[in-house]
Image (cartoon, rainbow over all chains, first blue to last red; front, side, top):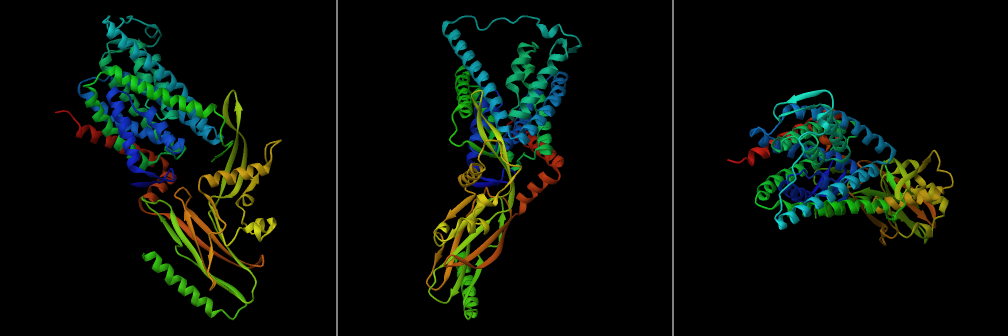
Length: 302
Length: 253
């Protein structure tokens, strides 16, 4: 079934996009991460202009995060105060990110910017995922202790401007949450991802937030950040494609819901190895495009 | 099937017109199957045929060339350079008025009966139509940029040439089928039909095909361009509503 995308100005196979976003949504729902960092490169490989892929993916993440946050809010797994602080940082970061995005687009270097960000972050995350899952599997095989114990206080607890977060049971400085939000916002604008893969580990290891509120709180801030990115990209670069967004939301949201149910019955380590391998392969493919001698030396950019 | 019937009827009309004018020594009468193409949500590109009839006295060799040209666009062409091991776009060259789409059909390859200057003057060479704006970077060849522009557009299916795609019947009727892919932009497309006799231009007939978005495609595109903030907020609302609907549909009881 072919469908014409009004902003990308091209005809695509609607069923194919729904199936791919559904598959990636399923996988990410099982593992519990957003699928943006695989879906956006997949769209680019399919020939969607990178600017449209990144900007449109933001609205898909808004939808899937919103469907996720409702469940967390019901069981009080949400620290609103922390979420708002992350969002304030995210607003600054995403505004800056969209500005960089528009500037690089005007300079004809947008594809380079997106690719470099993806190669770096996918490479690091993929490698970490593989490393952690392999360790976890080996630990389980040896029957050793499940995990190291975390230290009680880190540097994030010694900074000034300390505030109490009753929901998380913390008394920490506002600066680290603002910083995490800032980085998440930049990544959302430039990569079309929610940034949960940065925010969640940072909230656990840097802020020492209890794990039961981490995911809900990060989803809360991701909704605010990706909503802002969608509005800013619409206003500055006119690259949000509503028809493409509808396809991505349809596949991604439903896929993630099924994935979350299915994933509850599976072992996380094996899944993480699959996802880590997929992420590493995507990073290598993107890196190859940057370093290999191109068959065509010239390129048209608007 | 209906299109074929329509085409036949139109060709008969044109033929009739041709017979009426047959007293003139040479002449050309043309038509287009579709003068308006609507871009809807199932748009996959357009097919149209430029047809006509030409007549002449004497044994001279006649050639017909049909050109379909999309609106001129500003294009920026960059050459990749290796910087720190990465291939990075550099050395930009700007073209104004590069045809967004260009298709040519002729009775035989135009190079065999037209000089290079005639080809350029009549606008039969898309590379020559694109105007360089502000020159090329030092120690680079402008011709290489022009060739690259044509090569890239051809690879995208936006520049097409069928040097023998125009069939000329014995009775002087001809037709040239064209395919406009979905990635070609909307706008006013110029059609030019040229009649050559012994390599000399005898007559030129202009025409126009307009490609427009209609329905939901038009609404979405216009909203994104005219009210970008409102468009952005609608996209967010749509996403939130879909997310809520999904959570509601999949909630655990």
